[in-house]
Image 1 (tube, rainbow, N blue to C red):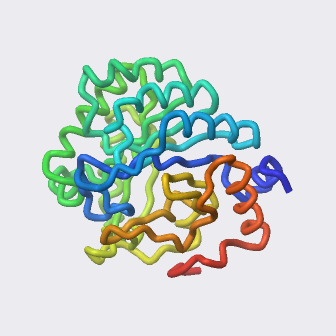
Image 2: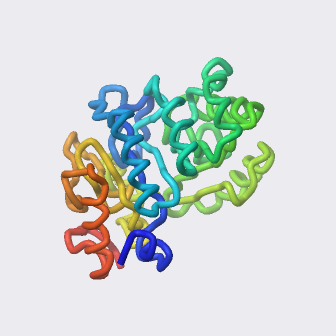
Length: 273
């Protein structure tokens, strides 16, 4: 079965993910990768990412995701995103704290391209949000969203909620609607007890649906899912590693197809069916 056939059959996801880097200007309490200012950068070179995007398109992948760390700590990220979007639709996961008017001016080409920025916002209440993500982040994120939208850039909201706080969801939805962001652009996911979340006893054990079959490329290799290459206490979890090789893309793609066709990755550990 080819990549195109597997995507059509929904055996694997249509999006290929890139961990562009692992360092971050925040240190969120539930971060899967335990990212912070002091984390090793472990960046994928721009030319490597762009070559892999070309391969992904040729193989039949339909879209690209970029995550980290905080991708926009990289000075070249605005140019990378615009170049990727000219080849395949792209979504970039970001903590949303860096979008000053001056910075957003560099992102203005995205307004005319199939690109979306998925900004993290976990509560309508500033204190509750900042308890997880850092003091002052709520205000900076709201300001950044407004600046992005004023520039015509497609903004999505990503909310990561701990178990038992569903009552926070409706006020959060009211807030993003007030910001002009529709329900269709609000992604809600649970905190998964991996990375720094495990240190703080937050979230739930990973369920099968929390580890989707979406080919994920990092400086350390190719993984089954964007929830796979987690870091705790400085150590990378390789339990869901597909291959150490990421290029040519056919190698990890074929490995993913083999596992997917057999019902999933046998190395997966700590999953709840």
